Length: 112
Image 1 (cartoon, rainbow, N blue to C red):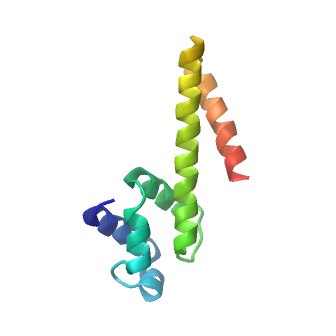
Image 2: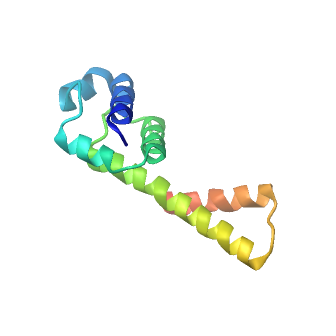
Image 3: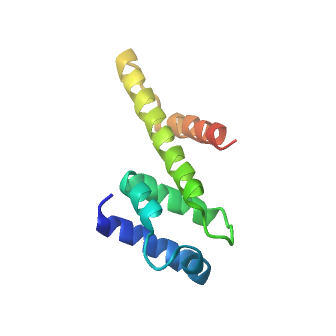
């Protein structure tokens, strides 16, 4: 991510966990957060943010927790891409409904 995107993610974290997040990590990303956020994709960061907010935890995420959620997104996307490539290679098609069912099962497996 670039600096603007890092700032945007940081602001989302600040807005979501408020003073708790600011007291724990500051108003701007420290070197550790900035270095790791720079190394991940925007979509992965957004997915991590969404998952952490939806988890309902009243506590701000740690950097390792945030990165773990981002890695989940990357793994699921890689599986989806590999499955799509396999299906194309096999010359078969799957209905959108069936694909969504399969995706839900994969996500459940990854979250367990």
